[in-house]
Structure formats: C-alpha cells, structure tokens
Amino acid sequence: MTLISVDDLNDPRLDDYRDLTDGKAARAHVIAEGQVLVERLAKSQWELRSIVAAPHLAELALSLVPADTPVYVVDKGALNQLLGFKFHRGVLAAARRPPPRSAADLLVDLAPSSTIVVCCGICDPENIGVIVRSAMAFGADRILLGPGCGDPYSRRVLRTSMGAVLNAVVAKTNDLSAELKRIRNSGVRTCAAVVDRRAAPLHSMRRHGPLAIVLGPEGPGLDAEIIRQCDHALTIPIHSEVDSLNVASAAAVLLNHFAPRRRD
Image 1 (cartoon, rainbow, N blue to C red):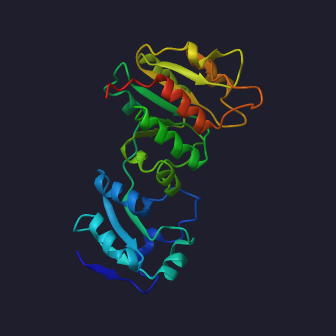
Image 2 (spheres, one colour):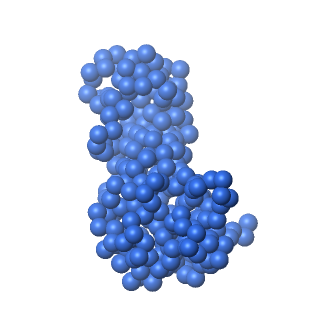
Image 3 (tube, rainbow, N blue to C red):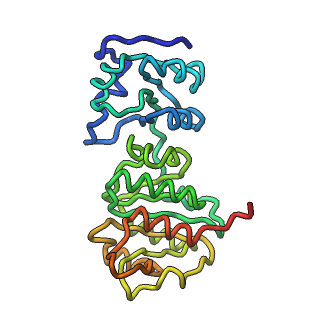
C-alpha cells in the first residue's frame, strides 16, 4: 500500500475522522490517536478501516499497519480542521466497532480468580478508561457497564485506557438488577464499593472464588437497591481530611487488593 494524499476535506474517505469532538452518540467505528495506540489497534483482533496522518508521520504510519490498510496523508492544518481539535498527535486510526456482547458472555469460563468490574452510572470517559486500564493491570478483563455509563469505545476511553479496552471483554446492560442476579446465581460473590464507615473495611475482605466489584458514580454513589442486591458492602478506609476517592482511583485500590498474585 502506498501513501494516499488527500487535499479535499470533503472527500468521503475521511468521513470516519470528521468532527471527532461531537460526542452526542456512539460512532459506528472507533478512533485511536497517536503512534502507541495506532500500533496496538493494528496488533489487536479489531478490523482496521484506515489511517490518517500528517505528512511528517506518514511513513511511520505506513509501517504500523497491514499492507492492505489505506493511509491517507492530510496537511497538518487541514487535519486540525477535519478533526475539530489541534492536539491529536498527528496520526489516527479508525477500526470497526466490535459486535456487542451480552452480560452472559462475562460468565463464560469463570475461574476462581476471575473478577468482573461492574460500573453503574459512570459517564466520564476518562474514569471509564482508567478503570479498564486498572482492571486489565490487575487481571480483571471482564467489564459490565450499566445504565448511564459512557461509551467504552470512545476516543477518550481508548486514550485513557492506553488501549487496554481493546483486549477487555466489555458488555452493556439496561437492567443492572437482573444482571447482578444472574451473576450471583452463577456463583460469583458481589461486592458493592461504598463510602460508608459502617461497611466492611477492604482489608477485612478476602477472595473466595470469582468476584464482582460494583462501582457507582462519584457524588450520589451506588443506588441503595443495587447495594442491597450485593453480597457485601465494602469501603476503603481513608484519613478524615479527605471524604472520598475518585472512582477510578478507588477501582485501582480495590482491584489490587483482590488481584491474583503473579509468581514472576
């Protein structure tokens, strides 16, 4: 594949990259920004559609992807206009969005060390991205997103997860109560993370088989009914000078505590 120079921003071959600041709805494709994410996307199982690059990164972009992937070269100033923002690292890739998964997919091949991360009402893509990155870092590759959660394959989630979401098993549900019941009936212990001194402190909890950690939005936290549906409510003890942790930071602490220990 040779480089393809594109001077007309109305060229339909650039439609995947047009006005990426518009976050009103999930796109039919996903976008990766920068050399690291583009390379990780190219090495994943996702189907690449194309690459777009500024001239000074065009040859590099060509080396990152399979030979049959079109690489469009667009002047840097025109690229800013096309994307709708300036800070894009000069090379982007578009891939087809993976087919949706059901919550039942998360229960396939469960092991005693399996951890499901359940997010409820977490809309900030940066929080979702960091949660997914932490989950993968601590051996939890199963993510369930409930109502009110953001798009797990948005450009910002890919960026803040550093591509970890490419390898996670991600499912969404509009009925979190029903799926929590399904998870519990499958022998998975469910733990609701709360800010409540009456809850069990994290250090007192131990893993006994597969586990689901349920996280809620900052501010209101988890709905009381969701907490009641869980086997346990747990909290991270912190100093009184701080009232709570950011949900992504809390997720990392929780996941590290329950992570199966690597022998290497």
